[in-house]
Length: 233
Ligand code: BJW
Image 1: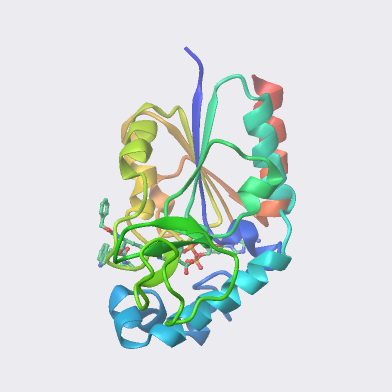
Image 2: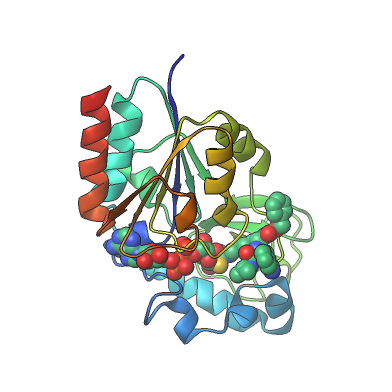
């Protein structure tokens, strides 16, 4: 029976590429009110503020490159004989740029847009304003970044649940374990019999559910961990 690995990544994996995390000192939520910029209610109240926030994020994300942690996960997928699924909470493109193929963006993607009026989704690299019409239905005011805000349902939960139920190894990298449902994945995987490993600068909210902790920067610890898995197979 081939081994199945599920890897959950959070903003910490992209920190060494130059993307801010959310809750660390100086992180995004220390500069922006989460209720204003990351909820449907915030978008209804302050559409320009929210779209400008994501325009700024999109511009930063255009400039960054994958770091050794993203590259190591892509190598793991290429060289590991079993199945490797990366579930990222990140809206950046760094896993794709590194070469990862079996990838789920559970919180959406900043380079895609979604029309809440007609449900069309499309790639989107430019700035958005409240006057930007949806290319499909031409309506304005409902066209927004295709990201998952608080109170909205993350993407592909059924596929993720199936993968967690059969995982033999679950690895969490660079996430604080404070946002659900992602924060609950480790407990689900462990209940299904998976070995659980955390890679982080500090102990996360789900610490008690992990069998092993690798504390250090993802750019150093992930390549080392991948090397170990590939050597042991
Ligand atoms: C390094 C490092 C380095 C740094 N190397 N490591 C009460 C109880 C339970 C749940 C709820 C509740 N009230 C409401 C809820 C639900 C709510 C929730 O979880 N709230 C909590 C805050 C309490 N969740 C939701 O609403 C979600 N939807 C939902 O639950 O729907 C219901 C449903 C569930 C299941 C099935 C079906 C339906 C939606 C959550 C949406 C989150 N959205 C955001 C914004 C996305 C778009 C964008 O990017 O702008 O997602 S918020 C933000 O947090 C973003 C992230 O993906 C997410 C997680 O953050 P992350 O990545 O963990 O970042 P940090 O900053 O927290 O941590 C960084 C970590 O990296 C730290 O640990 C550092 O140590 C580490 N680090 N440098 C290694 N170099």
